[in-house]
Length: 126
Image 1 (cartoon, rainbow, N blue to C red):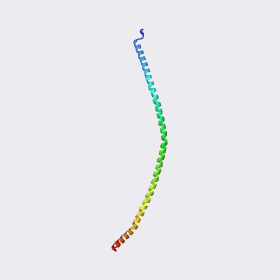
Image 2: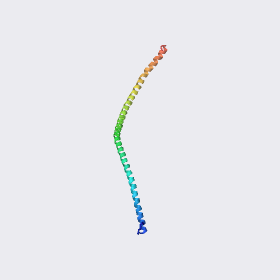
Image 3: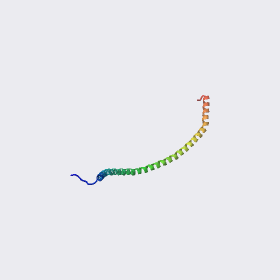
Image 4: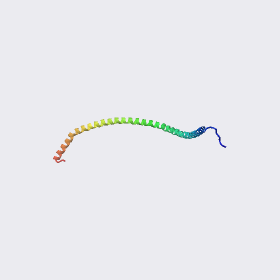
């Protein structure tokens, strides 16, 4: 049974192109649906990953607070060490002055000792 169409060939060609375009559009819609289906799975996985990242950041916040407190304590300790160092430098300066005075005070004793040894050796005692 032959299909007998009384339409002009241009109309048939136009209908054929429209039918092909409809089939192509249908195929494109199916492809888009597949992509969107895969995208949904990907987005769900991404949502899970972001939730885990948020939890990790929440866990990190107390650690950062503790770290900041530790840095503050270290800064205070360094300031205290600076004060101790300044005191020790003042003590060392005083000890150096005392040692200098003692050296000057003991020079005559050293000279006296040297003279006594010299006399003792001349007398045959040493």
